[in-house]
Image 1 (cartoon, rainbow, N blue to C red):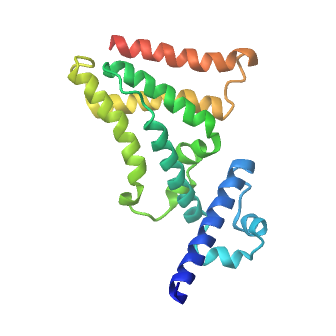
Image 2 (image 1 turned 180 degrees about the vertical axis):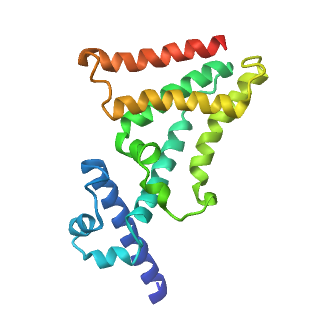
Length: 203
């Protein structure tokens, strides 16, 4: 291995270390308490080292955000190959729930916190997020082709479905269900999804 190749490998290894450590801290203490300094302390380097790879916290969080969306898309790939597109759409909601509740901190970063969207990356860099959204839109279109959701705009309907499921998830993740008995909250979340799925069947 030549000097240039070794340096490139070392650069990639350091970048991976920074991202992995930042993600671990984010998952452990949340975005607000994760800073360039705390990441640097964790990997036992100076903050200046991290700034050689990421210009600020937003750019670093953007990179973690991309990794989170890659994981999100991988979850969607577990969608069963069912003949009934409506049943597939309902199963997609359960997969969405599973990702969110398996990865609450990542979900918060992806869909609730504003910081990553402040990155100066162009829209073409958000490909994985767009591909994930296309899974939903394409499935809604399949349902329409099978006779469901007639005379409904595909994009608007997809947005409504996403917004509803996201709302249920966000209330749970951000602990905004404290007005309900604690013993009932988890079941209410899943019962809400089932009720929403039933409503979709009647649209």
